[in-house]
Amino acid sequence: MNNELTLYKTSSRRLVKVAGIEVTPSLQSLQDWRGVVAYFVGYQDVKESSRNLYAKTLSQFFLWVEKTGRDLSQMTRTDILEYEDYLKEEGLSPLTIGSYLVSVRKFYEFAESEKVYPNIAKGIKTPKKKNTFRKKYLHEDEIEDLLSVYEEKSLRDFAIVNLLVRTGLRTIEVVRANVGDIDIVNGKRVLYVWGKGHEEKDDFVVLTDKTYLPIRRYLDSRKGVKPGEPLFSSESRQNYGERLTTMTISTIAKKALREIGLDSHSYTAHSLRHTTASMILEKGGTLFDVQKVLRHTSVNTSQIYTKMKEEEERIQTPPEALLDAI
Image (cartoon, rainbow, N blue to C red; front, side, top):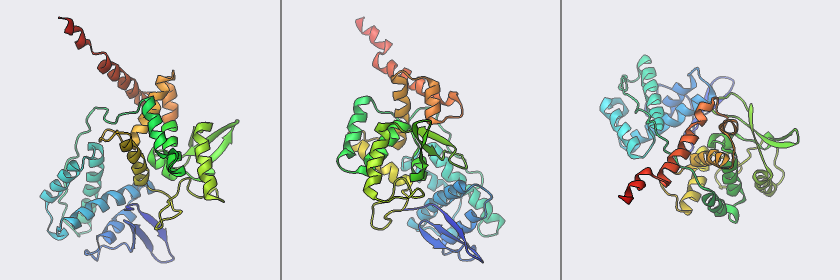
Protein backbone atom coordinates (compact mmCIF):
# COMPACT_ATOMS: atom_id res chain seq x y z
CA MET A 1 0.00 0.00 0.00
CA ASN A 2 1.24 3.48 -0.84
CA ASN A 3 0.98 5.54 2.35
CA GLU A 4 3.00 8.48 1.09
CA LEU A 5 1.49 11.91 0.82
CA THR A 6 1.14 13.84 -2.42
CA LEU A 7 0.40 17.56 -2.26
CA TYR A 8 -0.46 19.69 -5.23
CA LYS A 9 -2.43 22.90 -5.74
CA THR A 10 -5.28 23.93 -7.99
CA SER A 11 -6.48 27.51 -8.37
CA SER A 12 -8.76 27.36 -5.37
CA ARG A 13 -7.85 24.52 -3.07
CA ARG A 14 -5.20 22.06 -2.05
CA LEU A 15 -5.73 18.42 -2.97
CA VAL A 16 -3.99 15.62 -1.16
CA LYS A 17 -3.38 11.94 -1.79
CA VAL A 18 -3.22 9.84 1.37
CA ALA A 19 -2.82 6.06 1.34
CA GLY A 20 -3.11 6.16 -2.44
CA ILE A 21 -6.50 7.91 -2.43
CA GLU A 22 -7.11 11.54 -3.43
CA VAL A 23 -9.01 13.50 -0.82
CA THR A 24 -9.88 17.08 0.05
CA PRO A 25 -8.44 18.13 3.42
CA SER A 26 -11.29 18.45 5.88
CA LEU A 27 -12.10 18.24 9.55
CA GLN A 28 -15.82 18.22 8.88
CA SER A 29 -16.30 14.65 7.69
CA LEU A 30 -15.10 12.44 10.53
CA GLN A 31 -16.24 9.35 8.62
CA ASP A 32 -13.37 9.90 6.18
CA TRP A 33 -10.21 9.70 8.25
CA ARG A 34 -8.08 10.36 5.16
CA GLY A 35 -9.53 13.84 4.91
CA VAL A 36 -8.71 14.46 8.57
CA VAL A 37 -5.15 13.22 8.13
CA ALA A 38 -4.76 15.32 4.99
CA TYR A 39 -5.96 18.42 6.83
CA PHE A 40 -3.47 17.86 9.64
CA VAL A 41 -0.53 17.02 7.40
CA GLY A 42 -1.18 19.73 4.83
CA TYR A 43 -0.97 22.50 7.41
CA GLN A 44 2.19 21.42 9.17
CA ASP A 45 5.03 23.91 8.71
CA VAL A 46 7.63 21.23 8.03
CA LYS A 47 9.64 19.84 5.14
CA GLU A 48 7.90 17.80 2.48
CA SER A 49 9.73 14.67 3.68
CA SER A 50 8.29 15.22 7.17
CA ARG A 51 4.79 15.60 5.73
CA ASN A 52 5.25 12.30 3.92
CA LEU A 53 6.34 10.66 7.17
CA TYR A 54 3.30 12.03 9.03
CA ALA A 55 1.01 10.78 6.27
CA LYS A 56 2.56 7.32 6.28
CA THR A 57 2.59 6.81 10.04
CA LEU A 58 -0.86 8.28 10.65
CA SER A 59 -2.34 6.25 7.81
CA GLN A 60 -1.04 3.11 9.48
CA PHE A 61 -2.63 4.20 12.75
CA PHE A 62 -6.04 4.91 11.22
CA LEU A 63 -5.95 1.71 9.18
CA TRP A 64 -5.38 -0.15 12.45
CA VAL A 65 -8.32 1.72 14.01
CA GLU A 66 -10.45 0.78 10.99
CA LYS A 67 -9.32 -2.84 10.97
CA THR A 68 -10.04 -3.33 14.67
CA GLY A 69 -13.50 -1.78 14.39
CA ARG A 70 -12.88 1.07 16.80
CA ASP A 71 -15.00 4.21 16.87
CA LEU A 72 -12.73 7.28 16.64
CA SER A 73 -15.09 9.40 18.70
CA GLN A 74 -15.09 6.85 21.53
CA MET A 75 -11.39 6.05 21.73
CA THR A 76 -9.43 6.54 24.95
CA ARG A 77 -5.84 6.47 26.15
CA THR A 78 -6.14 2.69 26.54
CA ASP A 79 -6.65 2.35 22.79
CA ILE A 80 -3.40 4.23 22.11
CA LEU A 81 -1.53 1.91 24.49
CA GLU A 82 -3.05 -1.10 22.71
CA TYR A 83 -1.85 0.35 19.41
CA GLU A 84 1.65 0.57 20.88
CA ASP A 85 1.42 -3.10 21.91
CA TYR A 86 0.32 -3.97 18.37
CA LEU A 87 3.39 -2.24 16.91
CA LYS A 88 5.63 -4.18 19.28
CA GLU A 89 3.96 -7.47 18.31
CA GLU A 90 4.67 -6.61 14.66
CA GLY A 91 8.37 -6.71 15.50
CA LEU A 92 9.04 -3.02 14.78
CA SER A 93 12.12 -1.43 16.33
CA PRO A 94 11.80 1.03 19.25
CA LEU A 95 12.93 3.78 16.88
CA THR A 96 10.15 2.99 14.37
CA ILE A 97 7.52 2.62 17.09
CA GLY A 98 8.64 5.95 18.52
CA SER A 99 8.19 7.59 15.11
CA TYR A 100 4.65 6.22 14.82
CA LEU A 101 3.69 7.35 18.32
CA VAL A 102 5.17 10.83 17.88
CA SER A 103 2.92 11.33 14.84
CA VAL A 104 -0.12 10.10 16.79
CA ARG A 105 0.69 12.47 19.67
CA LYS A 106 1.13 15.44 17.35
CA PHE A 107 -2.11 14.61 15.57
CA TYR A 108 -4.13 14.50 18.78
CA GLU A 109 -2.57 17.74 20.01
CA PHE A 110 -3.70 19.33 16.77
CA ALA A 111 -7.13 17.65 16.88
CA GLU A 112 -7.74 18.95 20.40
CA SER A 113 -6.76 22.49 19.39
CA GLU A 114 -9.27 22.26 16.53
CA LYS A 115 -11.91 20.85 18.92
CA VAL A 116 -12.27 17.64 16.90
CA TYR A 117 -10.99 14.99 19.33
CA PRO A 118 -9.73 15.16 22.92
CA ASN A 119 -5.99 14.64 23.29
CA ILE A 120 -6.07 10.99 24.37
CA ALA A 121 -2.40 10.53 23.42
CA LYS A 122 -1.09 13.12 25.87
CA GLY A 123 1.77 11.73 27.94
CA ILE A 124 2.17 8.53 25.92
CA LYS A 125 5.87 7.76 26.04
CA THR A 126 7.95 6.40 23.18
CA PRO A 127 10.01 3.24 23.74
CA LYS A 128 13.64 3.85 24.59
CA LYS A 129 16.09 2.96 21.88
CA LYS A 130 18.32 0.15 23.03
CA ASN A 131 22.02 0.88 22.72
CA THR A 132 22.67 -2.24 20.67
CA PHE A 133 23.60 -3.02 17.10
CA ARG A 134 20.64 -5.05 15.90
CA LYS A 135 20.96 -5.34 12.14
CA LYS A 136 23.50 -7.88 10.96
CA TYR A 137 25.77 -7.69 7.95
CA LEU A 138 26.75 -10.22 5.29
CA HIS A 139 30.09 -11.91 4.80
CA GLU A 140 31.74 -12.11 1.38
CA ASP A 141 30.40 -15.56 0.47
CA GLU A 142 26.90 -14.49 1.54
CA ILE A 143 27.15 -11.40 -0.67
CA GLU A 144 27.95 -13.62 -3.65
CA ASP A 145 24.96 -15.82 -2.85
CA LEU A 146 22.72 -12.78 -2.45
CA LEU A 147 23.68 -11.30 -5.81
CA SER A 148 23.15 -14.62 -7.54
CA VAL A 149 19.46 -14.65 -6.51
CA TYR A 150 18.44 -12.03 -9.08
CA GLU A 151 21.35 -12.20 -11.53
CA GLU A 152 19.49 -14.39 -14.01
CA LYS A 153 15.95 -13.51 -12.93
CA SER A 154 15.57 -9.72 -12.97
CA LEU A 155 17.76 -6.98 -14.43
CA ARG A 156 16.10 -4.39 -12.20
CA ASP A 157 16.20 -6.27 -8.91
CA PHE A 158 19.79 -7.41 -9.47
CA ALA A 159 20.83 -3.81 -10.19
CA ILE A 160 19.08 -2.62 -7.03
CA VAL A 161 20.58 -5.20 -4.67
CA ASN A 162 24.00 -4.79 -6.28
CA LEU A 163 23.77 -1.01 -5.83
CA LEU A 164 22.75 -1.34 -2.17
CA VAL A 165 25.64 -3.67 -1.37
CA ARG A 166 28.35 -1.70 -3.20
CA THR A 167 27.38 1.84 -2.15
CA GLY A 168 25.55 1.58 1.17
CA LEU A 169 22.63 3.68 -0.08
CA ARG A 170 19.50 3.86 2.05
CA THR A 171 16.25 2.62 0.49
CA ILE A 172 14.83 6.17 0.40
CA GLU A 173 17.94 7.34 -1.47
CA VAL A 174 17.44 4.64 -4.09
CA VAL A 175 13.77 5.61 -4.42
CA ARG A 176 14.63 9.29 -4.94
CA ALA A 177 17.30 8.64 -7.57
CA ASN A 178 16.60 9.72 -11.16
CA VAL A 179 18.25 8.55 -14.37
CA GLY A 180 19.78 12.01 -14.78
CA ASP A 181 21.48 11.85 -11.38
CA ILE A 182 24.24 9.71 -12.90
CA ASP A 183 27.12 11.88 -14.12
CA ILE A 184 30.85 11.87 -14.86
CA VAL A 185 33.04 13.91 -12.49
CA ASN A 186 36.82 14.03 -12.96
CA GLY A 187 36.68 10.87 -15.03
CA LYS A 188 34.65 8.94 -12.43
CA ARG A 189 31.00 8.00 -12.72
CA VAL A 190 28.93 9.16 -9.76
CA LEU A 191 25.32 9.04 -8.62
CA TYR A 192 24.12 12.21 -6.91
CA VAL A 193 22.21 11.41 -3.75
CA TRP A 194 19.35 13.12 -1.94
CA GLY A 195 20.36 12.01 1.52
CA LYS A 196 18.53 11.68 4.80
CA GLY A 197 17.69 15.09 6.26
CA HIS A 198 18.86 16.95 3.15
CA GLU A 199 16.81 19.32 1.02
CA GLU A 200 18.46 18.43 -2.30
CA LYS A 201 20.80 16.03 -4.05
CA ASP A 202 23.99 17.51 -2.67
CA ASP A 203 26.00 14.35 -2.03
CA PHE A 204 27.16 11.43 -4.14
CA VAL A 205 28.45 7.88 -4.29
CA VAL A 206 30.96 6.63 -6.85
CA LEU A 207 29.67 4.00 -9.26
CA THR A 208 32.40 1.56 -10.16
CA ASP A 209 31.98 -0.53 -13.30
CA LYS A 210 30.68 -3.46 -11.22
CA THR A 211 28.05 -1.15 -9.76
CA TYR A 212 27.14 0.75 -12.90
CA LEU A 213 27.02 -1.93 -15.61
CA PRO A 214 24.00 -3.78 -14.12
CA ILE A 215 22.21 -0.42 -13.92
CA ARG A 216 23.11 0.32 -17.54
CA ARG A 217 21.79 -3.06 -18.71
CA TYR A 218 18.56 -2.45 -16.84
CA LEU A 219 18.13 1.07 -18.27
CA ASP A 220 18.82 -0.22 -21.79
CA SER A 221 15.96 -2.69 -21.32
CA ARG A 222 13.58 0.21 -20.61
CA LYS A 223 14.50 1.92 -23.90
CA GLY A 224 14.44 5.67 -24.33
CA VAL A 225 14.49 6.60 -20.66
CA LYS A 226 14.69 10.32 -19.93
CA PRO A 227 16.84 12.08 -17.28
CA GLY A 228 13.85 13.07 -15.14
CA GLU A 229 12.50 9.52 -14.88
CA PRO A 230 13.11 7.41 -11.76
CA LEU A 231 16.26 5.34 -11.88
CA PHE A 232 14.22 2.29 -10.88
CA SER A 233 10.54 2.04 -11.77
CA SER A 234 7.59 -0.24 -11.11
CA GLU A 235 6.99 -3.18 -13.43
CA SER A 236 3.50 -3.97 -12.14
CA ARG A 237 0.47 -3.35 -14.33
CA GLN A 238 -1.14 -1.07 -11.79
CA ASN A 239 1.84 1.29 -11.34
CA TYR A 240 3.92 0.57 -14.43
CA GLY A 241 6.71 3.09 -14.90
CA GLU A 242 6.08 4.89 -11.61
CA ARG A 243 8.71 5.43 -8.93
CA LEU A 244 9.22 2.53 -6.54
CA THR A 245 8.45 2.88 -2.84
CA THR A 246 10.83 2.17 0.03
CA MET A 247 8.61 -0.80 0.90
CA THR A 248 9.19 -2.30 -2.55
CA ILE A 249 12.97 -1.83 -2.28
CA SER A 250 12.94 -3.42 1.17
CA THR A 251 10.85 -6.34 -0.08
CA ILE A 252 13.25 -6.98 -2.98
CA ALA A 253 16.18 -7.11 -0.57
CA LYS A 254 14.33 -9.16 2.06
CA LYS A 255 13.19 -11.72 -0.50
CA ALA A 256 16.78 -12.29 -1.62
CA LEU A 257 18.00 -12.55 1.98
CA ARG A 258 15.36 -15.15 2.76
CA GLU A 259 16.26 -17.13 -0.32
CA ILE A 260 19.86 -17.55 0.87
CA GLY A 261 18.72 -18.56 4.34
CA LEU A 262 19.08 -15.23 6.17
CA ASP A 263 15.51 -15.01 7.40
CA SER A 264 15.29 -13.10 10.66
CA HIS A 265 14.46 -9.59 11.88
CA SER A 266 18.19 -8.90 12.01
CA TYR A 267 18.52 -9.13 8.22
CA THR A 268 16.83 -6.35 6.27
CA ALA A 269 17.62 -4.00 3.40
CA HIS A 270 19.49 -1.86 5.93
CA SER A 271 21.78 -4.83 6.58
CA LEU A 272 23.22 -4.22 3.12
CA ARG A 273 24.29 -0.74 4.22
CA HIS A 274 26.05 -2.32 7.19
CA THR A 275 27.58 -4.82 4.80
CA THR A 276 29.10 -2.00 2.73
CA ALA A 277 30.78 -0.55 5.81
CA SER A 278 31.94 -3.94 7.02
CA MET A 279 33.50 -4.84 3.66
CA ILE A 280 35.32 -1.49 3.42
CA LEU A 281 37.00 -2.19 6.76
CA GLU A 282 37.66 -5.83 5.90
CA LYS A 283 39.36 -4.85 2.62
CA GLY A 284 41.71 -2.42 4.34
CA GLY A 285 39.65 0.77 4.35
CA THR A 286 39.52 3.16 7.29
CA LEU A 287 36.76 4.60 9.43
CA PHE A 288 37.06 7.79 7.42
CA ASP A 289 36.44 5.76 4.25
CA VAL A 290 33.29 4.37 5.84
CA GLN A 291 32.24 7.88 6.86
CA LYS A 292 32.67 9.18 3.30
CA VAL A 293 30.82 6.34 1.60
CA LEU A 294 27.93 6.19 4.09
CA ARG A 295 27.94 9.99 4.33
CA HIS A 296 27.89 10.15 8.12
CA THR A 297 28.18 13.69 9.47
CA SER A 298 30.56 12.48 12.16
CA VAL A 299 33.14 9.71 12.20
CA ASN A 300 31.79 8.81 15.64
CA THR A 301 28.72 7.36 13.91
CA SER A 302 31.00 5.17 11.82
CA GLN A 303 32.75 3.78 14.89
CA ILE A 304 29.88 1.38 15.48
CA TYR A 305 31.31 -0.76 12.68
CA THR A 306 34.65 -1.23 14.43
CA LYS A 307 32.72 -2.31 17.52
CA MET A 308 30.77 -4.70 15.35
CA LYS A 309 34.01 -6.25 14.08
CA GLU A 310 35.40 -6.51 17.58
CA GLU A 311 32.22 -8.26 18.72
CA GLU A 312 32.49 -10.76 15.89
CA GLU A 313 36.11 -11.54 16.76
CA ARG A 314 35.08 -11.88 20.41
CA ILE A 315 32.50 -14.49 19.43
CA GLN A 316 34.78 -16.36 17.00
CA THR A 317 37.68 -16.62 19.46
CA PRO A 318 36.10 -16.41 22.93
CA PRO A 319 38.53 -16.13 25.84
CA GLU A 320 36.12 -18.35 27.76
CA ALA A 321 37.30 -21.26 25.58
CA LEU A 322 40.74 -21.00 27.22
CA LEU A 323 39.19 -22.44 30.33
CA ASP A 324 38.20 -25.64 28.52
CA ALA A 325 41.70 -26.95 29.20
CA ILE A 326 40.89 -27.09 32.90
